[in-house]
Structures are given as structure tokens and as C-alpha cells.
Image 1 (cartoon, rainbow, N blue to C red):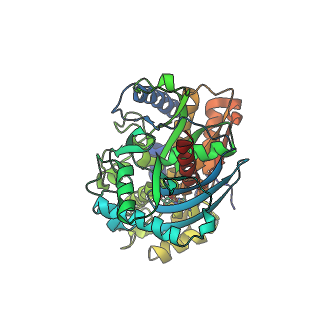
Image 2: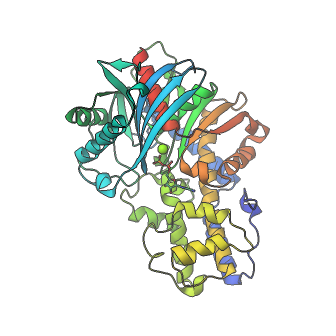
Length: 470
Ligand code: ADP
Ligand code: MG
């Protein structure tokens, strides 16, 4: 695999690039740049927004208390169900915790159709209950024998990765949909209640005992294996994070407990929706305007898997209209909303610059562009690099802000990250770390990033366990 440039300075020259192509790329590149000064500015603004969110309700960065105060010790044992509704995928998992940080998982993935994403909420929740029912029917009785049960039922942790105002570990009302969901009759309602009702309607013997955001789940799952974990991150369809906060710092929270810490779900996808510091371009504005939640989740729209392909498509169309690539000719496919997948960016970034054969296949065979030159494809690759690098550097800025806020620059911490963008995008991690080095210097080595694959599901099961242990 060719080496992937970690900073803007490392981008290679494009062969046979005309002056007008070069100046167009430079100009686009400038708009997406997160240089040191910008990075610092974003970190500072992010820290302020975190503080505001801890003090008062209804802030841009919502800083949602999770009511999870327990930390898994790795010694927990038991069998629990988890349901993970992430945005793109739905997963049902049965997780056996076998102590010493070991566990075994059985899981089934389901895709959520557009009809469920945009229809009646009751239909969506009935679909969720159906999936759980089907999953259980396919298990052996021995799979969950001896598991903890409440009133003879199997306990389930529900990972629900949309902004929720939580009032207890098993209660939370939906604030708004994101990531393409628009179901009616759900906003303002308790999502645990809706799921439990759907399960009861179908007589599925399952009790929903914990509601967690996927970031909270990821944090718990990573902490089960690595006790020094402070932050859980999602870089998938959406982007968000959670961390352990001192309860005394959560000024807006009335909560009496002996516990010292509670996990806070930042809901950082909404960061800077006022567009004060983020490097926002006309390509982002176009995407935002055409999205089903305009002016909301602005940080998420620059960073996460649901959007990077579409930003890239917007840039390519602009270059086509200026007759700077593909002889000025587009295709019906490329002209279609969301046709440029984020996974294409991964493929093109890791493709051999001297031939860009995989890029050619994507452009000519998948997207039906009549013909492309090597220069065209190198320009496309550059566009992918520009979009991918901004995403990684913005993710890094958010993490730098949380690390600084928590005062662990010198002591260090583990950070668990789940999501296909982080898992599959080449050098995403290396780009985050390279920006860490610019910001923290040698202290950057104090932070260990780790893939918490399926963390969001495993963590929900852990939350179910912690909630029933009391
Ligand atoms: P969820 O967010 O539903 O839990 P994932 O973590 O799998 O699901 O993230 C799905 C997102 O990841 C999609 O937006 C998709 O575009 C993106 N994605 C999938 N494969 C890749 C890849 N190879 N490279 C980059 N992004 C990818
Ligand atoms: Mg997920």
C-alpha cells in the first residue's frame, strides 16, 4: 500500500497538472485546511462549549449525563442482550462476560430500510422487537442459561445513538433525530418505554434495563479491557464521544450518589453549529442545505462516514462544471445524491498513485464516467485526501479538547474508538496522532487509541449488568 500523507505538506505533486487545475485545487485545499492556528482555535472553542454544556441544559454541545456511574472492573460475569441502533446497522448481540476482560459474543446484523427510518416510530420499534424475537428464536437455550434475569426475563442494554435527554439509566426522551432518521411520533418520547412496549406487544421475554448512547457503550466496553480508558469515541455513520466526568463538575445535574464520576455523552456532532470556528466550505453548505436536518450537526457533517462521500461528490461536480476534470462531463450516477460512497475515499486514498486503477474502476465502472485520464484520477485522489484529512484533524481537535479538559495531558489515558470510518479509512488513526503530536508535543505518546470493535453493543450489555448489579 502506498504511504498515506498525514499532513497537507506531505501531499504529492499531481502529474501533468495545468495551471488552472492547480490553482483550483489549491483554493479548495485552503478552504478545508485545519492548520495549527485553526486547530488551536477549535480546541479552545470546544473546551468552552464543553464547560457551557456542563453548566446548563439546552447548549449546542449538550453534554448529556448518562447516569452510568459504575466502571466495569473486568471481573464481571453474566449473560446479557444488547440491541445497537447505530444509524446504518442494527445489531442484536448476546454477550457472555467470562471475567478477566474476556467475553464471547453471538450477534446478528440487520439493515434498517428507509421505510423504517422515515415512517411511524411504532413501526420502527416493532421492527426492533421483531429482530430481537428472531434472534432469540435462533439461539440454543444453553446460550443464555444461567443468565441474570429480572422477573424471568433476559436483561437487555439498548444502545440508541441519537440525542436523548436521559433522566435515569433506563429512561430517556429523544431530543431530535439525526443521521437521516425522521420517524414521526418519537421526538419527546421515552425510547426505552417505546422499545419495552413493542417487546411486550410481541410477548418477547426481554426487559430493557439500560439505555446508553453508542459512545457510552464504547467507553464501557473499552474500559472492561483497559482500565485506564477515559474516552469512548464513535467514528461511523455519525461522530460523537463520551468520557468520565467528576460529578461535582456537572453543575446542571441534581443527582445524589456516592459515586464520584459519571459518563457524559458530549453529543459533539452538534459542535459549532453556529459556524464560528469550523472550516466550512460552500461544498459543506450545499450538503447541509440538502440534508434532512439543515443547520444542525455541523461538526458531524464535516467529519463522519455518512457525509464524506457526498462532500467529495460536491467538489467533483464543481470541478466538472469548471471543465477541470473528465473533460467537463459527468454521469447520471455521479449527478445522483449520495452516489459517491465514503468507502470509495478509502479505496482511492490507498490506491497506487502511478496508475490509480481502482479509482478508474470506481469512476468509470461504478459511476459510469465515460473516460478518465491519470491526471483526472490524481485530482480525484487529492480531493479525497483533502476531505479525509480534514475529518481526521477535526476528530483529533475534539479529542485534544477533551484530554485537555480532563487534565490528563501528562498522566495519559486510553481512548476506545468504534465505527467503520475509524476502522477502515486508511491512516485515519495515524492522522489523528500526527495532529496530537503537533498539539501535545512528546506528551502525545501518552494517549493510546484502540479499536473497540462492536464496543457499542458490548458496552450496552455491560451497562445492563451494571444497572442490575445495584
Ligand atoms: P453505525 O454508525 O451504524 O454503527 P458503522 O460504524 O459501520 O455503522 O459506520 C457506517 C459508516 O461508515 C457509513 O457511513 C459508511 O459510509 C462508512 N464506511 C463504511 N465502510 C467504510 C470504509 N471502507 N471506509 C470509510 N468509511 C466507511
Ligand atoms: Mg455503531
